[in-house]
Length: 224
Image (cartoon, rainbow, N blue to C red; front, top):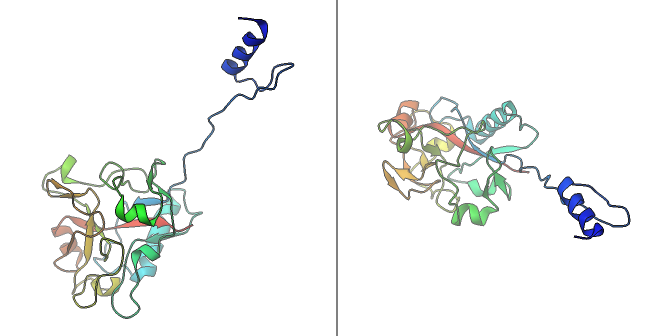
């Protein structure tokens, strides 16, 4: 190896920026992981389907994000409403991309979120602290909190008018029903269940949500 090649090799190995008479820039891998833009709430509001409306749900997301060090972003709950002036969950959450607490990109945009969402599962749908929620697939076979309130159809739009699927637009803790998704993508022990629209609940009390595998947890997305 001649002297010039030896200097180049040393520069690359040692990370030197320059070698006399040469113009060498050592490539550094200083990329920071993307900021968290998605999480499953670690705790629920605890009042069944009464979240204080969309504003109350968004405030819950914002509070948990702030406690986890991500309060500098604007957060919204993935929730739809029904009836006149219905709101689509997909229209509330920005345009992506969204990463989980570990920096893994969950979806790059609204299209991938709703049609190529393989990362939405028990392994990667983490809470704001980077922890997994309770699931039958890796824990107590009789206990799960995988039901996530959404009030939405598979494409993230509002449920049709008629039967209540949003606990009276997230203000009822008694009458009505809530459409939920399965954050672990399992229906009991069978894979393939939708992450955002799996079934309705038998009522809107906290006990109703718990009885079918939930706790009133939410999906939160950074909108900016």
